Length: 366
Ligand SMILES: C[S@@+](CC[C@H](N)C(=O)[O-])C[C@H]1O[C@@H](n2cnc3c(N)ncnc32)[C@H](O)[C@@H]1O
Image (cartoon, rainbow, N blue to C red):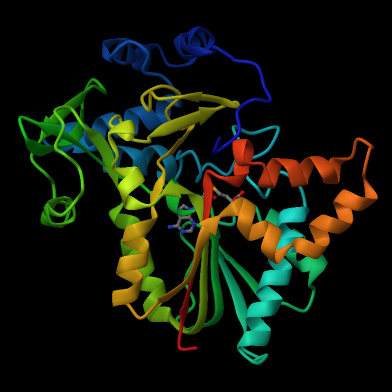
């Protein structure tokens, strides 16, 4: 399981939202009712997206829809600055499982610093740190680390020496959706009534990316392409003077990512700890995410001077880096119920977060 959704009951709020809308926005409601049934969410955001679709020739790419739904400057799911992660939010991450993840990562960052011979400018730059929970957990374990969190809209440091870190950041970047129709790739667009329509690929970069894929152009094969992840890698590879890129996210190597088993793609939405595959409901109130294709990150990284050091799953990684920490918890809590023991289980069990999450370490200038 990736983001965990087993903790809360299913909540069906469409009807209540409609009623609330009726009271607050009668005009808007009339418009909303013209949309495909099941379209709902933040009315102001729906209106903004609708206006942009109308202005843009009556359709926008799925990637633009996802960008607006998650990152619209005022109403986006992440930019609206509400609690999104943890019990009171929509899903759990390894960070929200408890402080153990941060304690183990603190060991990792200290080892990186030692490997670089303790330069004073050593810094951990975390992308997508949300509300800074991991920052708290890492610094509680290693208060002398320089640690910076980058969120949407923050300025990036021009030069980085140390470690660029992210956990569940790349899976939250807007993706292109593409589908095979009569043996050719078509792109998914979103129309005025929030229905999907197919059209030509919106950028030649997509055609380049898709040309060499190991996909047997099975009719109807649908997948997601995350060009933003590659843009991000290129950007940070330029900024990183010397050090490591540590990326943790759920995903697969290319062969798996594009296997017939994933012929519907990996796009998923999370709302109040319930998973669904409909990005046009709860717009602005649910997360939209796609798995990460790691082979491209590794190959692209090599061209950018980032040498791959390690690629494994979270279970193996945490057991290796956090060996002493985890053994101590397991021994101390043997035979008793314990939050720490539960955290170990949640983070490393293959059926929970241990196998789906992958860890990629790349290095530069070392
Ligand atoms: C799925 S959440 C992960 C949060 C946190 N890392 C965790 O594991 O609990 C993804 C985060 O990435 C952030 N994000 C998305 N695009 C970003 C960007 N271009 N720069 C910085 N942060 C970004 C989102 O705002 C969100 O907080």
